[in-house]
Image (cartoon, rainbow over all chains, first blue to last red):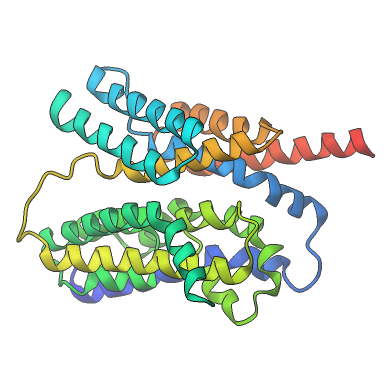
Length: 108
Length: 224
């Protein structure tokens, strides 16, 4: 793509992304949204966070140890450390540090 | 907004700061190494502000994708944000002037904080703003430094995965009902196996909406 096409693409991406984010508010705003939408909205964060975790880990494959062992070990460390200490920053740094060590040094 | 309040919000967003600086930096570096003008990457982070979409965009640029492909890819990759909006309708209904920006900046990471906080709209506004500042700053630094410095950052992107895992664990520990979380993970895994990593998000979302709807209906019948 040349610069002009790229800028047009950026505009399209920005408009579509914003449209997706604004759409629920445009449809259901003003009057009271249907009850089913509100209760769906309450249950969704739990399901969405589960989906996001899977989305982040979608590259895992079980054909070789290096393609899943770092994720599993670091993931277990994140969950366990958070369960024990309830400290987000600690768990994120610990998990990321171990993961980097595993992919850069152990499973090269 | 008081200074101590802003400090607290900053502290709450530090994990996202780490993730966004790193991923934004990575995005800036990739754009630089592909030879695009250094201002394009930060412009994208300001106006598009959707991490995974921006990474995908680099592929679209280099592949010379048509405008329709660009639009449909954006729709497919960002469709999950529809659901984020649905969860925030209630909370953001009285946000006033801050509302457009709150909606514009509703990324995965921002949503992970604002969707499960009891704090007010002002809090959510500054979380949203801080997060975008991190993202744009990371992009700008990556874009400028570009290929000048090389270092081994492999694995640093796990910080966002770790963050989502923490939020997931936290929600699990605080909630009595685990079925929605199980539905989210289970549906995503099954759809990932069926459709593959590039295409599983939309079928997953449809299934999740359907299952949660059926779940609500059952609860209503039980209670009513």
